[in-house]
Every structure is written in C-alpha cells, then in structure tokens.
Length: 337
Image (cartoon, rainbow, N blue to C red; front, top):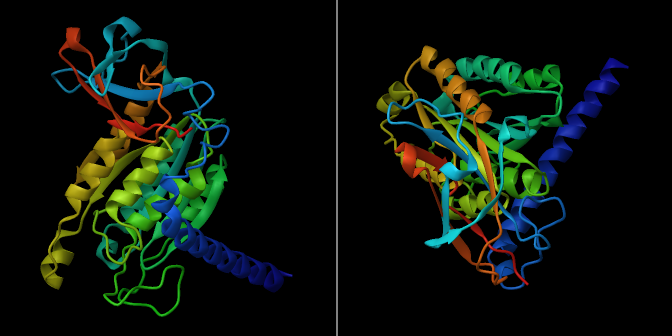
C-alpha cells in the first residue's frame, strides 16, 4: 500500500509539472495579444467592472521608520493620473483574510542559505497565519513546481517548504520549463507570472507573494515586465527577501544584478525589498513583513475616469499632515468594456 501511495504522489507531482508547463506556455504566448480583446476580470477579483471600485492597500511609516497604525480616512490623499479621487471605503486591513504564496529559489546560488530560508519561512507562517488565511508553496530553479496548493494547514505548508531542494544546476533536458539555448537555472519571472496569473488571479482580499531569492533570473520564458504586469492585473503585492550568497558569485565569477529587478517588482506592487546579509537578518526580514501585514490600510475609490479601455492608471497615495512615507501599489490596469 505504501508503494502505491508513493507512486500516486510521484504521478501527482508529474501532472502538476505538466499542467504548470502548459499554463506558462499557453498564457505567455497569448498574454500580449489578448490585450486588445481582453476579457473582463473574473468574478471575485478585487477590481470589478460592475462596481468600478479600485482597492489600494497601504503601509505608512513616519520619519523614524516606525509604522503608523492609527490613521483615519481623512489623513490620506489619493490621486489617479494626478487627478484627486474620493476615498469612499476605508478600513484597517489586519482582519482581511490573507491569500499568500511563498516562492522559494532553489537554484544553485541559494545552496548555502536555503536551510535558513526554510526555517524562517516556517516561523513566519506560524506567526502570521490565521484560520481564514490561505497559503501555497512553490519553488523554482530550472523548473517551477507547486509543492503545496492553497491551504491553512501549517503542517502541510511546513512539509512543502522542507521539500524544496537545490537543483544541481546547469541545463536540464527534462523538467517543467526546459531551458533555452542559453540555459539558465533560475526561472524567477516564470514563477511570479504563474503565481499571479494562474493561482492568485481569481482570489479575493489581500494577495501577497513573498519571494525568497537573490533576484537573478536565468532562462524564464517571460520577461520581467510581463511578470510585473501579471502581478498588477491580479492585484498582487510582492515582498522580496533579497538573500544572496556573495561567496557563490565570487567563486563562480558571475555578476550579481538581482536587486534592481526585485526592487521594481516589489515597489510597483506596494511591497518592498528587504536585504539580508546573515542568518539573524532573515528572521528580522520576516518580522518586518509580518508587522506590515498587520498595519495595512485599505482604501477604496471609484475612479473619475470611467473609460473601460484597459490602460494603466498611475496611483499616488500620500499622508501629508504626518510627513510620512506610504507604500502602496503605483497603479492598476483598468478593465475593458
């Protein structure tokens, strides 16, 4: 019976890989072309054509860097494309259910830091997860694999996190995403694209991706801009724990340029990048994210621009009276008519 169970689990994992591969190949190919005849957002997404309400989650810090948890609606100013908007809905989002994805880089550059990432990710979920919250776990290297689908079960999530192992590196001939001519063993952009487009798009509430990576991408089928657009269209907030092994890059002779990509992905979606240099800083980084998720504000408004043209609209959120810094997504894509 144990052999049958093990065989079933292997077959299930293979099927997940095949499905993921088809998803990325089919949706990536049609992503740009679908813009002209884009279908309306599916029911249950944060932005709905019927209500025309745009939801913005914001985190506010004072000059000293400390979180400000006691603001009111009147403290905020919100603009869309430099036009003032009326904030109709306001609440503290700490009680809004979380739908999260933990994305773990298992490429060779993470070999010396992966165990720390696993341990602190498990501690983070233990601290943050509440009964109504859901999380999935995904790892990426030369392939992208869903280790655990949405669940509130910490035991299953911890088991999935532990399941991630370093890929031996280099080009593989088999896997979810076979490498191109140039090879590449870190499909970060594919992982973000797939998570946003295939897993989080139709979820509701606060949607967060937490990346555990040094930000380097090699071999993805989609570009950085495409991954970011998928996250923006699915109303996903991206937090990046930038944990890099400097010795790996020193010894291999590779250059490290991942920080700029992580900064773009995170800052454009309302999250942020937290750099980690040692084991103790990993725990602190997760603590920062946990604190921010507990002190988010939810601002909702009906845009004065009522055109359903699918264009990107820039959002600016300020708290002028407090001389504070606001982290919020920098825009959204309008629905199409």
